[in-house]
Amino acid sequence: MRSFFSITVSLALVAAGLVACTDPVMPDRTDGAAFFADNCVACHGARGRGNGAFADGLQARPANLTTLSRRNGGTFPSARALSYIYGDPEQSHLARVMPEFGGAMAQDLVPVEIDGVLTPTPRVLAGLLAYLESIQE
Image 1 (tube, one colour):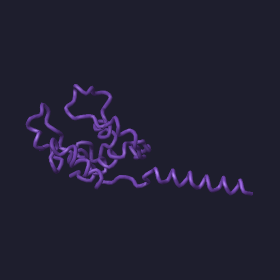
Image 2 (cartoon, rainbow, N blue to C red):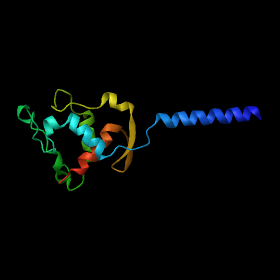
Image 3 (spheres, helix red, strand yellow):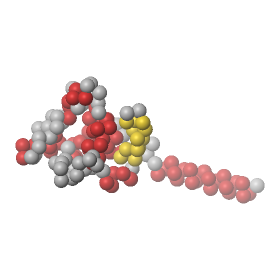
């Protein structure tokens, strides 16, 4: 009986520890807006229209991020946007102006539905996708 109690308590402590190590709250557009403000405004502008302070000095003009859905037949292109932001494997880092945001972000993943499939996505990029979808015109 005593070993059953010990095992039960041990399992409860392990379960509590696992719960404490995970953040069950999915990121939302507010989280994405904070990431955008810290990492994207300089080129894409405060409202995402491609008119940031650095835009004129870049070889390629930053995209107007408020028209992604319009340019995709009215549907927000989650898969394409995530692929490009994270670091599109078809584009080398020398062929693109925008930095790749993958790498270390891959340690904290959340499930995001991309084209009907739950896809492990870096938490900060999941929030950014939610934000970008919210600013579509």
